[in-house]
Length: 332
Ligand SMILES: Cc1cc2nc3c(=O)[nH]c(=O)nc-3n(C[C@H](O)[C@H](O)[C@H](O)COP(=O)(O)OP(=O)(O)OC[C@H]3O[C@@H](n4cnc5c(N)ncnc54)[C@H](O)[C@@H]3O)c2cc1C
Image 1 (cartoon, rainbow, N blue to C red):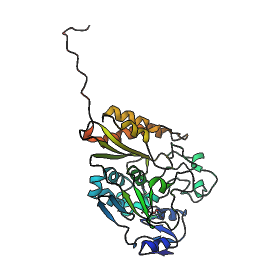
Image 2 (spheres, helix red, strand yellow; image 1 turned 90 degrees about the vertical axis):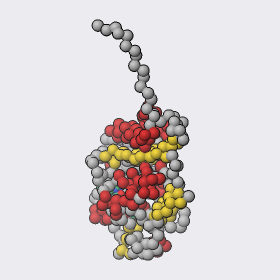
Image 3 (tube, helix red, strand yellow; image 1 turned 60 degrees about the horizontal axis):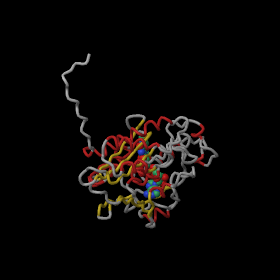
Image 4 (tube, rainbow, N blue to C red; image 1 turned 30 degrees about the vertical axis):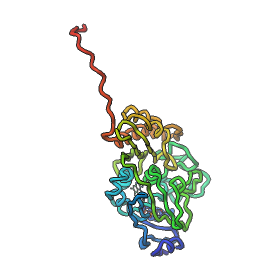
């Protein structure tokens, strides 16, 4: 049965699984991995909020990713977030998929999505990918399930210190929303009856520069092998990095911040040398599986590239070393 509640309260009280854009849920149902009643959020009032005020940016849970990617208020003040939303999936998916659905989608693991396989996420005893084919999976081993967390927006919102508002008014930060990844059955920490109504982001700093980038196994319409967002602040003279937020996804069962990279940037001159040295720290703590060592090689390059793109014309290029004066002597 499908119900179409009109209010957030009715949706929370509804019987069945919430469906937003349906781009993930319907696929799971077609595959036979998900069954049961649905509570469709199509007619629920209030999920399309879009406000920018002195407290920050307030995005309704039902906004499409296309809106997040293309609205000038996001592009101007939260450019890394806009790039992340615009860089995932396909235009068709971005038009249909919602902000909350993107945060709460399921993993892309081929064992999980096979209805004939009982992996740890479905209550089985072991992670089948860990023992089998895990080519696209984690290179930071942070729990039994090694499927990378699929949400680009979760990674981007983590770097924005975003808070997710639930139907009862409570707010969760992204790490709390997702949980720590130690329970292989959970891709996020919400329970039935909990409805995401909005996502709140603090205002961006006026001098912020940001970028998003990914390594991907085909040109488009694919989840990333590695994805990174960087937000950088420069001092007024543009001579020093005063703050940095860098987060990574596609490499563990949860997206996470890169504090060692951030610490290596803050207080430094924004030169390529500084960015490259900071990027090299992004693999600290990595623990690749037999088939995911290649991701360790990808990470520093992607992080470096995203940092460079975030800085843009803020990069300080040191003058070339002086050329020794010609002596007129000819070396044989
Ligand atoms: C080819 C392809 C490539 C893709 N690449 C990427 C990528 O690179 N990065 C990425 O992040 N995603 C990617 N996606 C996935 C896509 O972003 C998700 O399918 C989409 O974001 C899910 O949003 P939805 O609104 O359709 O969610 P749904 O499928 O409707 O729901 C997903 C989950 O969210 C829950 N839910 C939805 N709304 C709420 C709410 N308000 N409160 C509580 N629970 C809720 C549902 O119950 C369900 O469990 C890709 C998809 C495809 C097909």
